Each structure stands twice: as C-alpha cells, then as structure tokens.
Length: 368
Image (cartoon, rainbow, N blue to C red; front, top):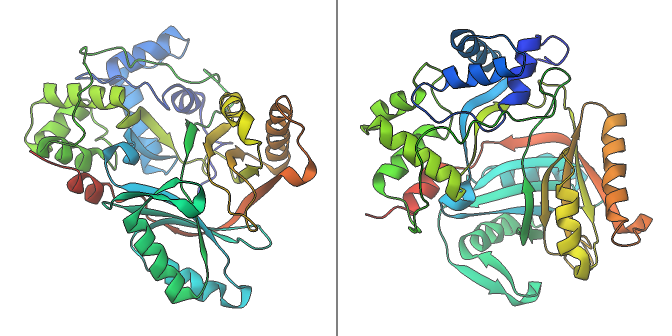
C-alpha cells in the first residue's frame, strides 16, 4: 500500500481536498474545475488537472474518480452483521462467511466477543417487521443468507440494520490548500427536477452499471460514458445531476484511498444512547467533520447494548483517540456518558472487500 501523505505535492493536496465532492457535471468538467482552483490561489490548467487526477488514480492515491453511487437508493438492501468467531476456528469461520457472494465487506475487529463484522448486500427480497427486535424492518433475503451462515458456522449472527442515517460522508482532508474541503461546482450544468419513479429505466440501469466503478478520466468523461451505453451526452449529464439530487448518487468527485492518505486508524465507536435523546445526539455528532459514518442501529439484549454508531478515522493512534474523545464530549452535552456506555472497536484485519454488487441490485429494480 502506497503511503502517499508525506509525498503528495501542493497540487495533489489541493485536488484531494477540493474535489471529494461537487465536481462539475458538464460536458468538459476539467475546465471549470481548474478555474475554481485558480480562484482559490492554485495555479493549474485544465490539462494539468486532468493529468494529475489520472496519475493519482493510477498510483492508487485515489480509489476512483467519478460518481459515488448510493446503493441503498438504487434497489435491494444491505445490513451490518456482527458475530463471534471462536479464536481456534476464526479462519475457518471467515472462509465460510466470505464464501457467500452476498457478503460484501468483512472485518476482524477488537472486541471480547463480537470479533467479526460484515456487510450483507442483496438485490431483492421483501421487507418485514421483526417483532423480536422491537419492530425493526428487515429483509427476507438477508434472513435467508444469515440462516445459511448460522447453519454452516454454528455461530449466531446479530443483524444490525440501519434505523436512522445521520451522516455518510467519508471525506479525508490533508494539510495544504483548501484544507476546509469541497470546492462545490455542482450548481453548474443543466437544471434538473427529481423523478417520482421508484424503479430504474433500462437506460438508467445501464448508466449505473457503467459508472459504478468510476468515470473515464478524459476531457469529456460524460460523453465517453454516453458512447459506451449508446445514449446522448446531454442525457447522461442530466441524469447524473438528477441522480445526485435524488440521492442515487451521493457525490461526484475524487474518491481517495484513505490508507494512502495516511488515515490508517479506523475506529468504530459504539454508544448506548438513551432513546429519548438519539434524535438530538445524531445531528450533533454528524456535524463533526471527522465523523464519516453516523447511524442508529438496534440493540441485541444481553449481547449488544449499543444503539448508536459513529465511525472515525485518524492518521495515527493519538489523533484517533483525540477524535473519539471529542465525540464523547459532544455526546456528554446531551446525556451523562458513563464508562460502560460506549466502546471503540478498531479493525485489525480486512477479511473481505468486494464492494456492493450494484449491477445485480440495479437489474432487480429495473422496469420499463
């Protein structure tokens, strides 16, 4: 893994900070993007900007350039699952879990009991209310996958579907120009209105599949996408802008490899927040710029007492601990946080990371 934080140029840092969202969705986006950087004191041409983005992508400093598709709004369902893998059988259990293609991510985390955490993503399935989990809405296909995993491993799974989303914005700032974040050019381009369709059209499905791994890093990326799927460039521009408005696309820009930027400390903090203050605590914690994900999830009585998750990242252990303490201080403004009311689960190993299978979820949610 290339640790690039110390070697990135001033221009590289400006690009990473400025365009983790809000990249122009226009025919030739690198022209207004470069102009926006020049307005902020970063002297760069469109050609130079394009060249650097391409190089950063090739070197692995970026995971991709383009639209970050919101799988939840495309179709299907996903959920976070925790389980105990006995230390003497850990590798065997990991292999059994990872063999399920519905398992998109799997991490080993530091916890005395729940040491394996994975994401299950399915393309279809009916929603139902789980009476044993206080009416939490779950997916029948997820139920089937978890039942198979339990039968194969002999271990109980604990389904932790998202109840409330307060923030999903994994952005990683660097020291350097525009260190406060986005240069937002999302207002450029055609005006669009949201659609009232619950499903995708076949052409929208083709677009999602084409852009899920990133846009071509060329002078005219949207026209190149249009050519690949047999669509008009204007339609691609308008649809991506509309998807952004509707939440099908979270943002358009550079998606950095946070490990390459030096953000190697990945802490999942969990909290037992009194139910009556969760709706106040959520937005307050989500407002902390270093919190990348912030959710309410169900408890599991006798096993898992926590109902609030806040993911933080740091460039070293000291920074990570400092940020976790700031989350605690923010929490403490709303309720008296005790030592037993929270925990921090650091990931020790990536066991699987294949990503959400967007093509399957888009296909299952497509109609004429």
